[in-house]
Length: 215
Length: 195
Image (cartoon, rainbow over all chains, first blue to last red; front, side):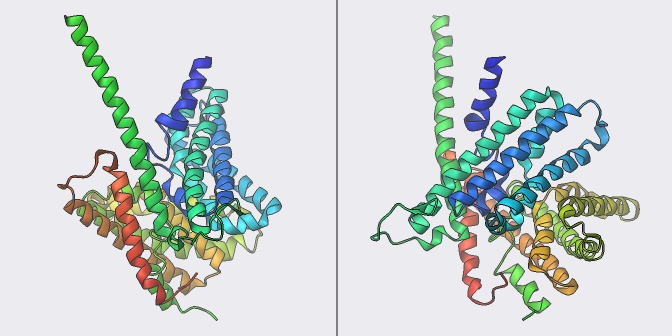
């Protein structure tokens, strides 16, 4: 049982990361990543919604009729998103204004629906909760990486603290939309090359193993 | 000062393109942009659904949610309006225009989960547009989205044969192209701004 949990964490955070490996949830991934603090709040919001909607879907999985399950799942997700929205408005009104419509757009984030469909629909509640949480954290991880690059180069700060001194000339492009595409593309490029290399060496090992046994 | 609907229409196509500046509707944008024909089909469906649902959502918000103080339910209501409208269009098309249904039909379900549609509805509320402005924003947003996906599909078809580093193939490459397109669209931004 323990190994199953480990496997899920590894998959969600790295080998099957929802953003860089499955290219899901890109919209919000790009829009909020110009400041690290915004990104963290957004990421944790998504992790919260993914975890609890996976849990709820899993609890109700034998009750929901198959034909209307999409609609029910959407409503469950929307319910948690409203919770996040209200909490943000109540405790961090500035943050809520900065994120604008993107909090509401968590509903259409394909990661959440994807986890409900692919995992929670056929698994027990606790492990579904864990799976959703890990997927959400995998998403947060990539977003934070993008945000660190963008905020550091765009403002010379991280979390609003000055890291690079006065000599630093901020790259205005990092604050604007196109840079998000470039940074995410570079991250995908690097990780994919890495994964391909790994697959290749693994494949060679298998071939060598076969040859060795043949001899 | 109130922005005229015409300006909003123009701006939402070029200067504040919903895809290139607000990053909405990326999922279907990346996955359906492999050939021009299906990109156009999806684009047409998006323009139609976005124009109508922006008006519907505006009416629902103004005349149902506000008077009954149900503002906080808007996420759920907007999603339901969009899903119901898409379902309705699908049924009408199937019944009366079967030929159009076969070309457009496969794209309709995709639209329900297209975040650009929901995004437009949420922006309407935040920016406090009136009815005409909403219509202009919805139609312009749809056309802008279609423009972007058509451009990407065209470029992808052209560079299909060229050698791209293995790790960059597919989504990575599409994203870099999109980034360059977004840079080009920034060139328009001096003309008008609605944000």
